[in-house]
Image (tube, rainbow, N blue to C red; front, side):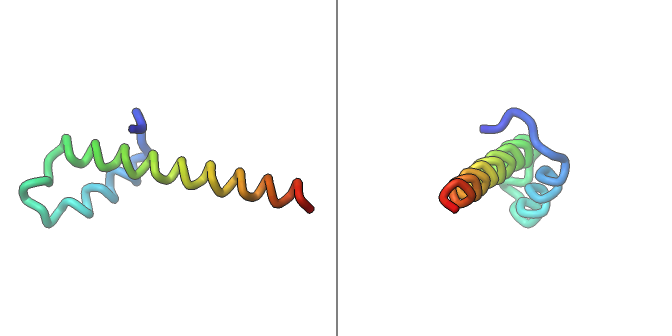
Amino acid sequence: MAKTFDPKRYELAAAFLADDTDLNTEAARVTLAAEIQEAIEAELFFMRSQLKAARNAA
């Protein structure tokens, strides 16, 4: 899990959890924000590697 996250990820996590009274806690928001951050970073890494491979193949 990502150790830090962008404040926008926290806002997104808070929005997702706003309607869930059981999960709408600070710990859950922080955990979800970190998971969102990690997923975005992994996808960007994948996209960059694909772009680099495509450029090298051209």
